[in-house]
Length: 113
Length: 150
Image 1 (cartoon, chains in turn green, yellow):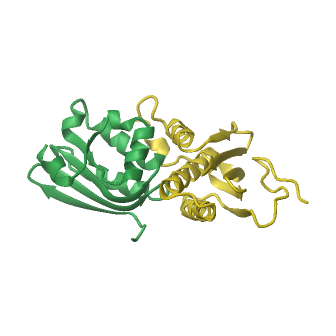
Image 2 (cartoon, one colour; image 1 turned 180 degrees about the vertical axis):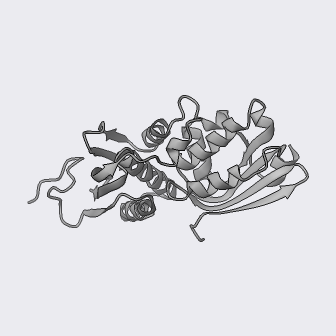
Image 3 (cartoon, one colour; image 1 turned 135 degrees about the horizontal axis):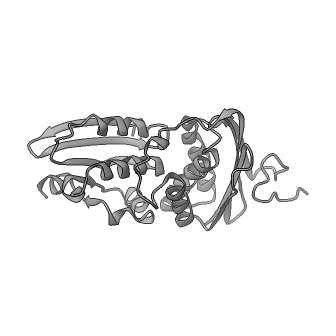
């Protein structure tokens, strides 16, 4: 698997889906941040699909937390993550971020929620 | 016989065959190399997949914490040592020029309390290894170490 971070943005009827692949670390997190900041502010829903992310460190988490906070009051309805890999679930658990993010185990579940 | 180095003994004498030492510019793109070196050493100790995954992340955070505040002109000394059961990683970041430029992380001044860069990093390290220590920034130098056993 190529470790280089790639982010593809898909616009759906319900909002924006970011398909993220590779490693999100201090060297690459700005790519994810730029992608999130490029989304239309009126986008009703943002789904960040991390199912193909093989590494996520605190810098990447900081980008996600920043976006979560920018999403405003009804953040759980607007901003959510798709996480399938155990190592990514683990870093979310040990940082306590599972309590603030809406996390789904599949993309269809996140889109349909 | 060579004395076993203590955590934080970067640059000191090490036991031949049971250590890897790197000296590199403390640039974020080097972190993947540090993760690779640590995971290779862990595989020699027969760490399982989950332990290696934990170690890779903890090492990444240790390098980040040690380098924070000293970047961008900073050199990192990175030492991995092991015995039959335990792996020790030590980082020493030293500024070699003007530091403390604004980083991408600094732009996230929106982060809520408890989720700042250092807090997240240390929470991760604490959860994933057996013991660790990160010294306060001492002038232009910051040192940290972690230990993880099988």
